[in-house]
Amino acid sequence: MNPDDLIPDLTQRIAEIRRDIHAHPELAFGEWRTSEIVAKHLEALGLTVQRGIAGTGVVASLRAGNSTRAIGLRADMDALPLDELNSFAHRSRHAGQMHACGHDGHTAMLLGAAEALLRLRDDGLFDGTVHFIFQPAEEHEGGGRVMVEQGLFDRFPMQAVFGLHNWPGLPVGEMAVMPGPVMAGADRFEIVVSGRGGHAAMPQQTADVLVAGAALVQALQTLVSRNRDPLEPAVLSVTRFHAGHADNVLPEEAILGGTVRTFLPEQQALMEEGMRRICAGIGAAHGVEMRLAYERGYPPTINTPAETALCHEAAAQALGSANVRDDLRPSMGAEDFAYLLRERPGCYVWLGNGSGEDHGEGRGEGGCMLHSPHYDFNDKIIPLGIAYWLALVQQMLPPPV
Image (cartoon, rainbow, N blue to C red; front, side, top):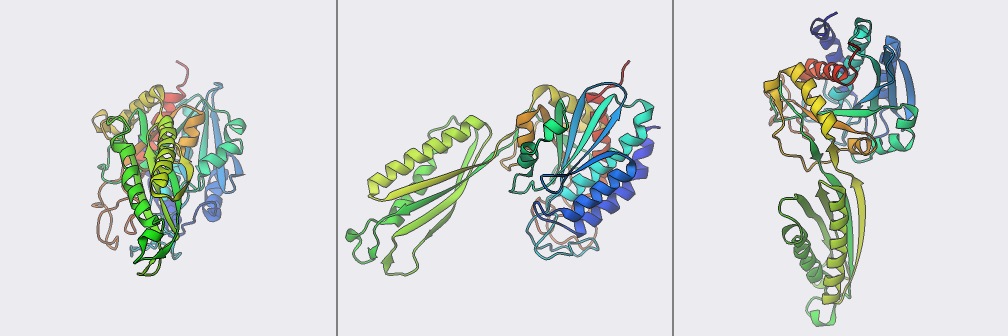
């Protein structure tokens, strides 16, 4: 059977599954309905299915031929805590929950790829084992890390692992495949500034946490502008600054918080070290105490060269070589697929979702940027995603000559 003949037959059914999942979004580690849909679909195909990894995670395995090689293909399943503003029939039925990042589409495309590979298995398309990884809690909660901690790679041995994300703004029919860092590491911090409060008309009797905090915000920016190589991107953003409640009172305490984004693990360590040094210095200069709580979040998502080259070939096979981009800049957004790539080589690619021009009426105003209340996954890219997964399996698990 020719994959080009099979995929169009699958697309409509997979799109219906996608829209059903979109209408019933579930937040991190609460994807029970979605997990059940995924597991039942895979079990109905006759695949070996394991439930309960990281709570709602599902892994299915498909083997062909005699090779001992194995790879993993991953899709995320969770939604965002967001009120949807679309009005189409498959809009969210749950207030405060929405598939605004396209995980409904990622899940559906991987289900389609599993079904297609099963139907093509006896045609000698590939030789080895494919593990289909349906992961919970990508948004903020690190479901990928939990799956790794609960033995994902011990229970399902594989030599490489691969991920895919829809990418608004990238035209439909195009895919971005870049080596090296592709998504940033994302850390969080909170700084408590403690001083001596008092009357606002008598600042000389206080240790002013507001002045100290303002100086700190300015000084922290020098970590990027003056302490780092300009060719190594980083972002340090103070996003919260809370202190005081009255016009005539200088408060005892101020609380600042924010995020740090970097592309290399060693840069995360340097940023934390620099922040501690600046907090100590500014605190001493202003006679206040500064306590920094620095929380390491998702590590950078770093594609390995050999696997990226094979993904490039797979994308060219599926979409045409002229439609494969390797010139996009990495994103300062974060992705917990990074935890899987810390354990195994692999590659994370972006599949063009368009700019909203393909969506039907009732989608809402504006484009379809990720995490927007007007977002919807573009069903036109479902066959492209399935075709890419099939081509990648062929590249990674080629049949014997």
